Length: 516
Image (cartoon, rainbow, N blue to C red; front, side, top):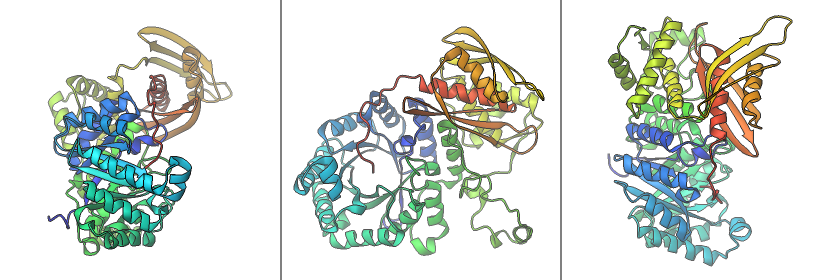
C-alpha cells in the first residue's frame, strides 16, 4: 500500500475518549486498551495529555515504554511546559509523536487566548520547532479551524509545515460542520497552501450533530489521509468519529475512497468490548459495526434473502470485524490452559497470572450457574475479575435481599472497607434501591446516583446482567460496571466499582483549555 493509498488511523480513545464524563482510566486500564489497539494495528495511539496530571504523565510514559508497533502520541498546548512534559513522557517510545495545538478562530484568539493573530502565528511556529527538539514526528492542530478565517488558517499551516510539522490536523472542534463544507475546507487548504505536499492532512471531528463520521469521510474524499477517532465513538459531549465506522466504510467502499487502513479489523469487536467494560459505557444494540444487532435480521424478507445469499442484505461479513457464533463449550471440569487458549482466540489479553487466576475462578463459579457460557460472558467476567484484582478499598463480601409483595424490600450487606469487615442494612423502594442504601449506611459517600442501566449480556433466563452506574460527587463524575447472573449482585458490584473510583485521589490539576 503506497502512502497515498493508506489511511492513517489515529486513535484518541485514551485521551479524548477519557474526557467523556465518568470515563477516566487508570494507568493499568490504559495499558490494556493500548495493547488491544496495537493488536488492532492502529497507526497512532494518542495516549494522553501529559501535562494534565502526574497520573496522565505516568500513563503516557508507560504506554510509550510498552507499545512497539504503533506510534505513541502525547498532546501539548503551544506552551513550553506542555511540550517539555510531553517530550519527557515519550522519551522511551519506539516511535513517538508530539501533537501541539493553538486556537486560530477570531473568537478563540480574542476571548480565550487574548492574543493577536500575529502572536498566534508566532507561537504556533515556535511550538512546532520546540517539539522537534524531542522528536521528528510533530503534528499541529489549529483549534476551532472550522470557524477560522481561511486566509489566516492557510498562513499558519504553511508556516508550521516550514517549521517541521509532518501532520496537519484540522479539527471540527464543536461538531458544527456539514460534510460538504468540511470536505471543501480540506480541498481548499490542500490547494491553497504552497507546501501542502510536505505534510499529511488529518481531521478530528466531533459528533454534536451526529456527523463526525460523515465529515471525516468527506475529508478523506478530498485528500485527508489521517482520521482521528475513538473506539465506539467515545468522547466528550456527543463523542468523536467512531474508529470502527470510519475503517469499515473505507474498506467496504474502496470504489469511492481509493484508500484503505492497515487495521486487522477482526480485532474491532474485542476492542469495543474492552473499552466498554473499562469505561462503563455500554454499546447500544443498534450501534453500527459493534452493536449486538448490527448483523441481526428480524424481518422475514431479510432473513430469507440472507439465507439464500448473504450479500442481499449484508454488505460486510460479521466475522470480518470480530463477531463470532462460537460458544465456550468448556464446563466446570475444564482446565486452565483451555480457558487461556479461548481467551487468546477472542483477543483478550490479561496482564498477569493473578488476573488469569481471578478470571478462571470466576469462570468456574459461572459454570456452576449457567449451562452454556458464551463469548460475551467471558468478556464480562474478565472485566469483573480485573476490577477485583485492582486492590480496591471497598469490596462486597456478602449480600442478602428480601423482597416480597406488599412488603418494603430490605437488604443486608457485608463489605470489606480497607481490610475491615463492616455490616449495614436498609430498606428501599426496590431490591436495588435497598442494596444501595445498605451500602451507603456503611460508607456514607455523599454521592448522587445519576444513571442506572441494565443490559443482558446474552439471551436466556440464566443470562448475566451487566449493570452500569454513574455517580456524581462535587462535580466529579464516574462510571461503575458490574456483571452477574443475579442482577441485584451485579448492581452492588457496579455501585462499589463507582465508589472505589470516586474515592481515589484526583490529581488532574491542569484541565485542557481547549479541545482538538
